[in-house]
Image 1 (tube, rainbow, N blue to C red):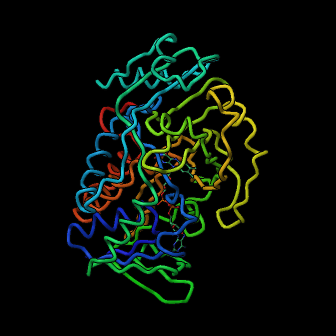
Image 2 (cartoon, rainbow, N blue to C red; image 1 turned 30 degrees about the horizontal axis):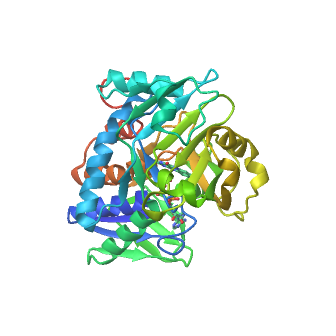
Length: 373
Ligand SMILES: Cc1cc2nc3c(=O)[nH]c(=O)nc-3n(C[C@H](O)[C@H](O)[C@H](O)COP(=O)(O)OP(=O)(O)OC[C@H]3O[C@@H](n4cnc5c(N)ncnc54)[C@H](O)[C@@H]3O)c2cc1C
């Protein structure tokens, strides 16, 4: 079988990996360089964690995600993940952490509740004012995202059954007949076409417009004062919501940057527009950092990075069969990277083994199993 894949982010590359592992031929088309710094997958890190609010389906899928990453580490000959554990904090009427803890208890992966006395002893770098509850789980960590994408592209590029076409924008995709046409006017055909075009996907598949909304997001990288750096390098990932602003914090593991972002979807912006950002637009997040993180007044903003989510109304992934020979693959809503390896492996199996497409779409939407969310 021969597959055509559009998009060289984690989803397109992982699907190529899954198909090539099974002995199939793959041609992958990427509009920019490979890896493309503008892809959503291309940032220093992405988080993987069990706490998932009320989404039991995605919480359960984390174990499958880890198994798929382990298979990838074995194929790549290196582990591009650093465990940190996950600290979920809540207060001021917000309840995501409590719901996550309840969901995880119901699936047999309980979190430990830390008392407000214990929290500052365990994590002295935090100011606990305004926090009401804290939950901890040993699992979770940092995926070295852009290193993974680069290593996977190199791994695939070395395989004779895979052809990678960088700098080759695809103008149109015919999912009924299994064909794509490049901007240069070349037609390529295969038994199946997978469109994994991230925030650009609605341009190629107009049926996704209105269902998948590109959403400009800004994250902030910091330089830490010397006396704080070692503690934070061993620090936990933090997911925090105490009222108006929710934040996530990625510790500077393995010499990577210290990063903070917020949970709010902008639901605006265009992935082809210039990607400028100003600290002023991050004031709510920076204010919250100032209350939560001790010594934050000495942190220096290193840079702001603009990146795009592809958001659905219910934050579930869209991975669905379209036409006789096509798949639309858009697992994002700001939480897709952690599932990149498993999304690719499983779609490759469904395509190659002719598994049921509807069941696959339900699984990718986090709806498989007992019907719970
Ligand atoms: C700020 C931010 C923080 C995030 N944090 C997390 C996190 O902590 N944990 C987590 O799990 N997820 C996180 N995510 C989400 C995650 O990064 C994405 O869900 C995931 O990377 C999407 O991968 P993708 O392959 O679908 O898209 P992309 O990585 O964007 O890849 C799509 C590729 O398709 C190419 N392309 C598009 N159109 C064409 C065309 N016409 N022809 C050829 N090529 C084309 C693009 O150039 C691009 O390289 C975050 C995302 C952002 C932006």
